[in-house]
Length: 180
Image 1 (cartoon, one colour):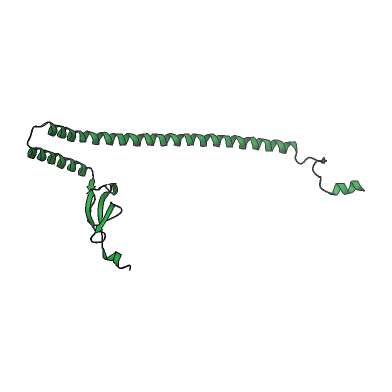
Image 2: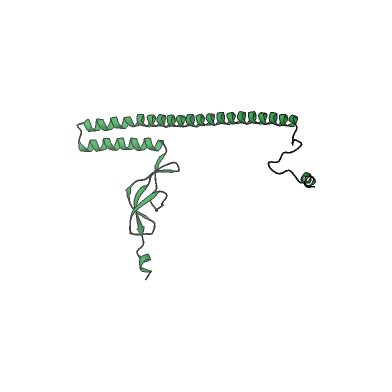
């Protein structure tokens, strides 16, 4: 009687089954599909590695190109600056009166200012304090937010600040007395 109850229950782990779960043809079919899927996965992985390598090469090439452009721009700017260096050397070597020397330096200054303005460099306005353009070094008595003194000029190249202006900012004295 035990044998009949054994036939009705599902086989347990480790017990031998009388009929196989799959035929050898089904196993062969699954094996061939597995091999095809594995080959496809290897092919995709190889392609992904190639694409990654191509992208890495592109990034390196783009960075090299950018570095070359920066070097070329620097070379051009330095070439233009050599003329001013020559002017200063001539001024220092000249045996001129102080007034002639001052006029010569003023001329070099005007030429330098003209050159940098032609490159788009402009002085930042310094009427009202703007933390996006100015660095407040100290505060003095005066109209709130008004720039009282400029210690160092600031410059912008287009929308970017190249150097912040160092300024003294006004602050009204009545504001502090109303607290108390």
